[in-house]
Amino acid sequence: MEVVLIRTVRLFQNPSLAIGMFLAMLLAGITFLGGSLVYHDPFQIDMGNRLLGASSDHWLGTDQLGRDVFSRIAYGAKLTIGLGLFAILMAIFIGVPIGLISGYIGGKIDAFFMRIIDGILAFPDFILAIAIAGMLGPSLTNIIIAIVLVRWIVYARVVRGLVLAEKEKEYVLVSKVSHSSSYKTIRMHLLPQVMPDIIVMAAIDVGKVILLISAMSYIGLGAQPPIPEWGAMLNDGRGYFQVIPSLMIYPGLAIMLTVLCCNLLGDGLKSYFDIRKGRDYL
Image (cartoon, rainbow, N blue to C red; front, side, top):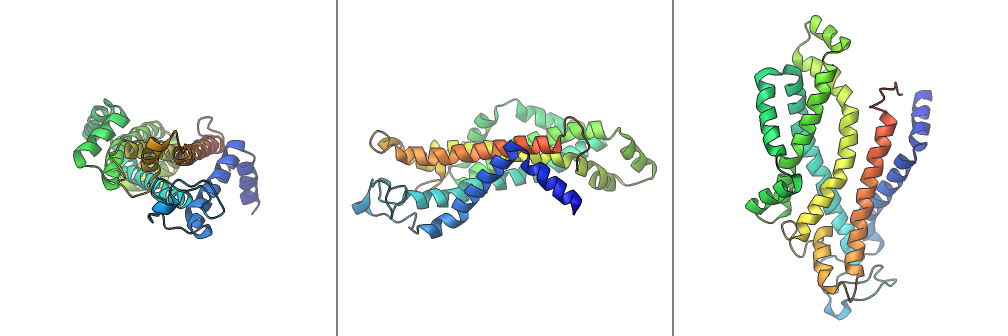
């Protein structure tokens, strides 16, 4: 109980982590409770109420088709944030095992995976994701596939480097001497050591992926009308920016706050784990 209390106190003593957690709770509240607070169908077209300003009935006004902007922002949060989290989880499930196996076993397996990773890293992430999504066709499913194909290599490369450093330490050598299997050594010893780094990377990466999803939807490769994804909402409001700038400001603020939240959480978790300094933390 005392250890849990100390961990909790240390958690909230970190300003970045505390602010990031507050923003995360705010975004979670909008995502899961927003639609029930002011219920409007985010897909319902009402041309008689188009381009209205903020009011008690429409908290953020309406768009060019009379749809409630707040409801679309809340619905879009489920898509944008949910897809970002899903893409990162898929990248972790693919990249982390490859990095663990490649770094620990080495040899031809390591050489094979590293040549693939080096070839993919020759291209910028954004350009490669656009190329893959363009070949697959415009849809949210295809941009998630494109992002996963691009992002797994980052986790594989980082985890491999960590494993190469860890596998020469005494606790791993003792595991080898005791004739533990490679699977048991990786699962019991190496994976727990790299998990803090993975968590920090994932927290920051969610923001990057959300930006990528929004950018690809903005240029027409992601969500298609009438799906209220934040990037697609930016594109929809572009033609009305001089008349009703809020149509672009609100989804833009949603994207900005989400990315800020992810960056703060990542920085806070990095300080909390104190991985780089190697301090013994509770």
